[in-house]
Image (tube, rainbow, N blue to C red; front, side, top):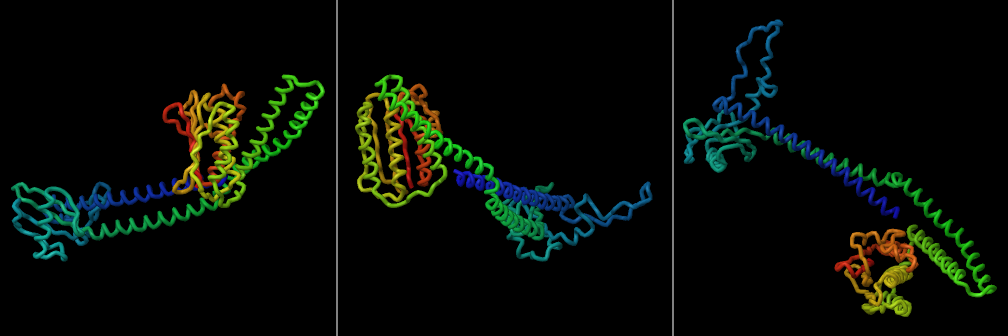
Length: 417
């Protein structure tokens, strides 16, 4: 259980950290792209509003203001300055709606010649009105007042190259930082769950100690009742006391078994004939089941070899059959099957049951939980058996679940890997 808790802590922590890192990377790059795209759009709009040319960034010197200072003529809208015309590469195509090129302005670009204009004209015609990206350029197609078209192609190589560099560096930083944090989480995970480990150890120790301490008085009481019965003869009060003493003994033994199972004691793994083992357990319960009005109908696949702990598997089968006998509707049969699975074996116990609450099927595997509390005193169960069954399945890297499709028949499916 502790290892499972530690794995869940590591998984959740790593998932949370990686999610935050990836989200941060996405936000940074989206924000950067939006900023770059906005700058490119503003530059194109500036050129478009100036009829396909760069505006004059060197206006006549302005007089001093009231404070005796000259206005700053180097900055315009905090984005463009006197160096903008020299760092901005663009060209403009003017054409009709039928694709006829009227003229081209290639003075501000060196990478495009007259022979290239047809290529970019086709791109503009295909796009229609609006913005677009193509082949290292951000462009905008605009309808002129006379019905003709203009297409401004702005060189975006520097801006997009910078954006790609930031993207690469941010991804690399995200991967490296996430990996480093994941390593730290794994290294310090044991310290994080240490309080739980200590609490769990104390709980197990308490159960073990209490069980051993209870065994002595229970044995003394049982012996005393037997001696008393020899002296005074059979009495119903003695019989009831002996019955409750047996229940206490069973409870103590179940608690010890459950505690040992939680300690993840190494299983005695070996290959054995699980078909024979399951059949033997089913046969041993046959008389007991018939005495309680239930016939066990088995369907056990023959000669299945399984690699696991034979004692635990036998205990699992005993728990499932015993549970079915206790809670099956009067006079109904119990179906018990074993079949081969792709990854292991599947053991199934099926019986009809009264007043099945399908919403609480998962709770059947909780400790001390009993679905039919009114029958708890009659069946003699403590709600521990199915919890032990789940621990056995988990120890064999499998699972167990309860299903009820028709609201009347309960089926326990145990998968062992």
